[in-house]
Image (cartoon, rainbow, N blue to C red):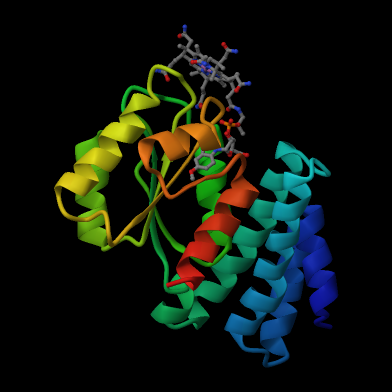
Length: 212
Ligand code: B1M
């Protein structure tokens, strides 16, 4: 029998089989796919994000929760309209040029997707030109730049500068993060925001989208 709190607890605990069981039970009980997604899976992932921010849980638990969530999303996706799936927010994310670190960036992408956003993950070693092109093509509202090396941080500024030169700066918010990055650096290069971890990155992205 479907119980939203059981579904949420299963996602938070990374219990993939119970999460899948509950999503299927919800569908069988006639609950709208968007409600199962928003009130169950996304609500649970928001709690996971908060726990991560507070250091109550760590990477392995987050990955397990994300896997449980993604298995639930995969069942719901075919039942939802395109608009419901996209949640209104297009995000482009990648690790900047010269930098091959992708574990944290992929975690951020996963949290954004789990939050219902339409995410294009460009991978690693992404040039300013490639970011700019994708922002244009996808009409992205948010671009997330990841850098783990002090030597590649300047590529974040180069990307912002290129986006500005191409007249796209007003249409897109630039969020940055990665182990070597700080709020002070975000201020210095004119980024719109900095997030220290995947949970706060998803929260920040959603707050920008809600603000219009
Ligand atoms: Co590299 N590496 N590495 N490395 N590596 C670091 C970053 C380093 C700090 C290690 C050290 O010396 N203590 C150091 C950088 C020093 C510096 O510049 N300040 C370093 C170095 C020097 C190097 C090489 C140069 C080593 C060499 O070859 N001599 C080389 C560079 C290669 C390159 O990129 N061109 C290199 C290579 C590698 C591996 C390939 C072996 C591997 C990467 C594998 C991979 O990513 N697929 C690796 C790893 C694993 C690390 C450490 C050990 C761990 C990074 C990680 O995955 N952390 C790292 C040491 C460390 O950080 N403690 C280190 C876990 C991950 C979940 O956290 O990535 O920080 P993180 O992501 C977090 C937040 O930062 C944030 O959210 C994530 C989740 O909470 N976040 C964002 C990340 N991106 C965001 C984007 C956002 C918002 C938030 O957008 C809005």
